Length: 189
Image (tube, rainbow, N blue to C red; front, side, top):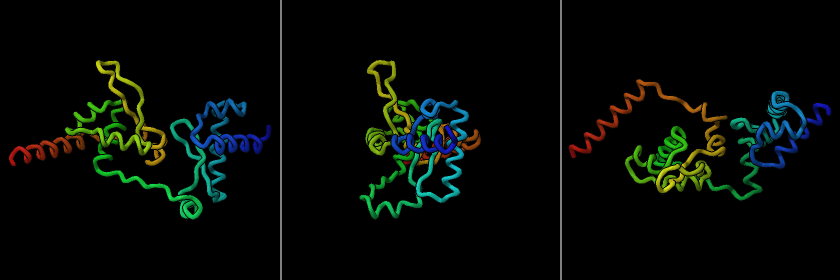
């Protein structure tokens, strides 16, 4: 099979599936190894960018997905109903950060870190598709474990959780001092 035919097959797979498709599944479908398949897809990604198409292929943690370029959004809303935009409040961002860095994590663990109930925040993040149940903890009551989704990766433009920024020890100490000062202020009131 020629390169154009292989690219057409990959394009058909990604377009039809809609969601992300693992590299191994694409490779198996076109009958090539993963490294060759990755090169084919990356060549397609470059070509889509060079030709200034309305769609692009993105990589999400070892999977690939075809999606519309952000620049085309204004044209889409003229045809389709405008999608609801979700607002990520400070509370939601704080909760999402805890889940992203500590996953898999239970609501109780989130609440210990935040110091307040987190049911509403976790439920909103699940509703927005940024967080999902990943299983149950093998402990009394079998609490639900939460983790981030591919939609989280997509929304925050990261390919994998390994790309999340890390804090150095100096920043951590600074944050601890601020938190202790704030806690002391509350006690003084």
